[in-house]
Amino acid sequence: MSFSLASTLPAWQALQNHYENVGKHLVLRDLFDKDSSRFNKLSHTFNGLKEEDGPIFFDFSKNLITEETVKLLVQLAKEANVEGLRDSLFNGDHINFTEGRAVYHPALRNLSDKPMKVNGEDVMPGVRSVLKHMKEFSDAIRSGTWKGYTGKPIKSIVNIGIGGSDLGPVMVTEALKPYGKQDMELHFVSNIDGTHLAEALNKCDPETTLFLIASKTFTTAETCTNAQSAKDWFLSQAKDPAHVAKHFAALSTNEKEVTAFGIDSANMFEFSDWVGGRYSVWSAIGLSVALYIGFENFEAFLGGAHAMDNYFRSTPLEENIPALAALISIWYSDFFGAQTHLVAPYDQYMHRFPAYLQQLSMESNGKAITRSGDMVNYTTGKILWGEPGTNSQHSFFQLVHQGTKLIPADFLIPIESHNPIDNNKHHRMLFSNFAAQTEALMLGKTPAEVKAEGAADEIVPHKTFVGNRPSNSIIAKKITPASLGALISFYEWVTFTEGAVWNINSFDQFGVELGKKLAKNVLSQLDAEGKVNDHDASTNGLINLFKTGF
Ligand SMILES: O=P(O)(O)OC[C@H]1O[C@H](O)[C@H](O)[C@@H](O)[C@@H]1O
Image (cartoon, rainbow, N blue to C red; front, side, top):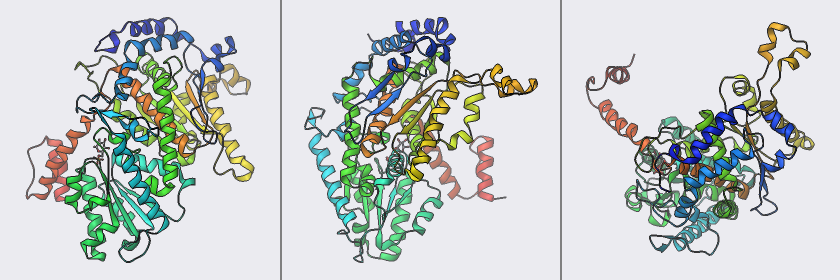
């Protein structure tokens, strides 16, 4: 069935009725009381990983859903042709139609020997050859056989990139720190704020530093400027431009600009335009990851994502974990009116995971025009946010528990800690908080319970928790390269499914362009003499204030 607005689909209408008649009246406490098999029915296990990495368990039972809700949501996905778009994606079709490109990042982690074609051509030989280059290079750097211009091995890696050329490498190297090379110093410079580069360079020695200039387009203003300043810093000591070859590598799709910058094409790690920036950690953009955790671990990371890809591709929607997570999220966004989605990893190493997911989800689905060119009349891209537990409990969880907003949440934890200190006491405490939070959100606390604790009458409402607040619990066996790969891939497919149902193009990002263009204009005005007067009064005032100072 072809459609433009998802809200015109019969299943959408049915869900609307279901929300009015059933959904908004659901009480989680009662649902569990009434059905002793609810937990079993609404939880799923992802078994696609090796024994040391998996499984990953997903509990959806603490959601404001019934089996009927799930049925209707799956029907919505079917009517929206999620499966068709999924097949087109894996077929290499140009489903990013606004940019005329395929969406083919699964090819980067296709560790099977199966071909994957774009425009009739198998992309796998190219993918494998870049992986081989990454292996040789990372082995040489890690073993110390690669020497800097004065013959010393490399000690510090500085990745210069922004957006997808930064968030993935930062998040993954942090999350997989236990697998990292202990004596390798990693720095990530993304912000054009000179402080970011200055602080990294303060800790580096030009003789032992390798710069990775990570930019899909190699035209991003922040990255090009930071890269140029890094090169100036390097040459102020190394003097001879020939030494650049030992200290600079480029991760990009744009060979012309890379060569113009002065990086040897032998030190260029390529990928293709069918890899979106926010899906690029699997590509050459992941070189800092491979350098830090070693190529074998990087391959295991790809393997975990590949396993989730295979699962998503072949599992019926009724059982399909990423598809179900997406549909439940749509249920809250579009029928309950939830505006945000919280992700709370109970794993300190995963502290950048929510930030990574912000780009994945919000840059993908922050769109209001359907694939047919109409303005949607429903909510799309949720505001994704989060911080690790237990820290988040001591700051914003107050609002999640007792505020006025419905905040669906993902709670994530591994069973096994990398640091089981004090006889695993810390991890047991971490887990107890993980479990207690979702329980508290769901159960709340009735006025009678508060009263029974001896609270004064006028205080009772303040200490009452309405409860009935939904959450997903995701339990990994351990955060390993493979399980992290699978988790990221899970969220990619959640994002994909949401975008497919909303019928928007999740793969372009025109929304970031306007500000970039205007900034260029302002910059040229900052460099020119005199006051500006061709903007609105506020913008004129701010620019002139910067020019003249206080
Ligand atoms: O990798 P680059 O071409 O430098 O792009 C870096 C980032 O900048 C852009 O503004 C896009 O919004 C992001 O999707 C992209 O990841």
